[in-house]
Amino acid sequence: MGENGDQETGSPVTNKPITTNFRYNSPLIQIGLIGLVCFCCPGMFNALSGMGGGGQVDHTAANNANTALYTTFAIFGVLGGGIYNILGPRLTLFSGCTTYILYAGSFLYYNHHKHQAFAIVAGALLGVGAGLLWAGQGAIMTSYPPVHRKGTYISMFWSIFNLGGVIGGLIPFVMNYHRETAVSVNDGTYIGFMVFMTIGSLLALAILHPSKVVRPDGSRCTNVKYSNVMTESVAIAKLFTNWKMLMIVPAAWASNFFYSYQFNNVNGALFTLRTKGLNNVFYWGAQMIGSVMIGYIMDFSFKSRKTRGLVGITVVAVLGTAIWIGGFFNQRGYDYDDVQNKTVKILDFKKDGSDFAGPFVLYFSYGLLDAMFQSMVYWIIGGLANDSIILSRYVGFYKGVQSAGAAVAWQIDAHKVPFMNQLIVNWVLTTISYPLLALLVIKAVNDEDNKVEESNIEVVFFLSLLHYHVNKLIPSMLVNLPQYVESKPRWFWFKDYDATVRLQDATVWLSNEPVRMHLASVRLHSSAGDKNGGRPASTYLTRGLQC
Image (cartoon, rainbow, N blue to C red; front, side):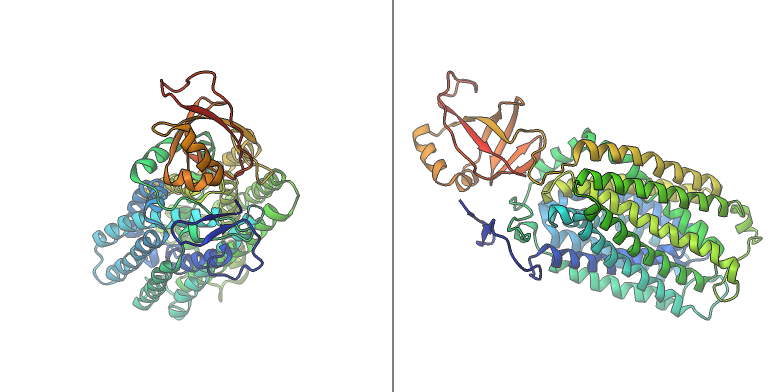
């Protein structure tokens, strides 16, 4: 029973350790690839958004486009996990990436015609594409790595991804270096973004299906090849009553809520055009530093997984509070009317010296906090399960709520809510999330790799044989149970919890959450009576379970 045949690839699924990570089907290479995809697409989008107003002097078009974007993102973020499970990574990611090209192109168009309609439609389509891309990315980033190195792999992804923001920040900085007055960016800036986004779309086609990705310990990221619409619809609907997901809602809502404030009302309000580009280089560079810092804490600081999670949350909470305090004192110096009436001093990195330093460090710190906060949340989500199917839904839910918050935030800014009010709301939202995340780590993140949620290590199933006679079924099960069940799936009664579950493809489904199953022992017991609605043949199976 050391190997199970993989029905899609024909290659064996082995439990023997694999010595090298430099394989095309290794988690390291695949997460590196998804990092490059996000470097080219969301990374360039972040650089464009980080300039404030999508690089335009008038932020109205960008605010409305982003509202449309995050409204559709909220819907397709939730649905994205199910779509990813049905279509697989290549088609899902490629479809999502191409919408980024259209969005950048809409602002190239706006540079010449000043019509919002194209930008708003492109924003709505980007919301659909971003929902698909980020659901797939989240499933890959949280499920592919080995359990005790999820923080490291998340930080690796985040560093590659945010290098896109760094390079993207250099594009407007270099191409607008001699344009000191506050004007919109030139055409070459948008064209440069579109070239990178096109490359990212093509790279998405290199991502492997999770059933083909093999971890260093020999395990695959999932045994499920493709899902179906009904299964995904039911599973997604149940997320809204899943207590773990409800605990993540405040953190998800907060995690993109602060972008409109930081991009438009700090970087967009206080600096010259070329300095905005330079600030973005350091903002996204700070994210690379922050992701490495929190990744180390989450993976290496203590032996206990729970302890590492709690320490990571504490570090982010303390640092985040200090940064928001700094933002509070900075915000006391200006407000919306000052920006509109041009009474606030516009800072330039070459001319303003010490006046520039304080707001620059604050903006850098906002980037640091963003990466640490989101990497922390991803680590916690990754600690809730190991299977790509489950984590794609969890991440999709997270991105959906995150995007709903962002849609509200961009409209708050469009309606000219005072900057100080926006800052305080952001501060409160992040602060509320910390104790809830800590409670989630305590209750749901396991210290042991092989601990099964909501079940004992040994559980008893009552098997309904349906149309098969027990004498025909049992010998086949004893020889090769996983293959038998894959070809002839059966429904089971889960005795301890009085719930119907299904054993198929070596996976047990408990409340639509799969638990990986390996043969440990088979013990047959005679049934004292029929327990499944009058069907004549029955038996008990006792099996060892592993996540």
